[in-house]
Length: 167
Image (cartoon, rainbow, N blue to C red; front, side):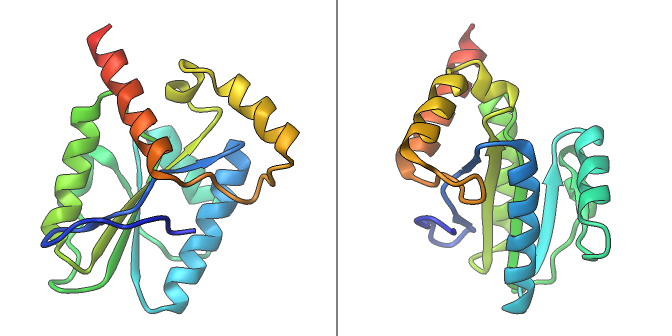
């Protein structure tokens, strides 16, 4: 669920979690929020658009988890030294914009962790063959409630961002 973690003085950077559908991603985020809260960790959800903030707010109603718009992270102040998990709903097309989110997590310190959650329905993944990946996963019997988390997937997504930025 959490993938391989890296990092030193800054936040731990979890591998991207890629979900088969948006509904599976939202359900998975809900389960992850519950599991992290059970371990007494603070959680901040970051959405990249106002529509995504609204969608998450409705889907996770009653969980009392802060949901911040990516452009308003300056208003979020984790307690110094607090264990905080920053779960990002999607990735920007621009790698530089995602790097700004990672820098925010790094400022939170070594007790912080950041993970990006994507769906095969996201525009970034659709631009790079998500339909082929979806059919392969179906043939392999992948379950919708389990994300794909691997360093190679994270690197492929970052490469896709580079291609979009250079197009």
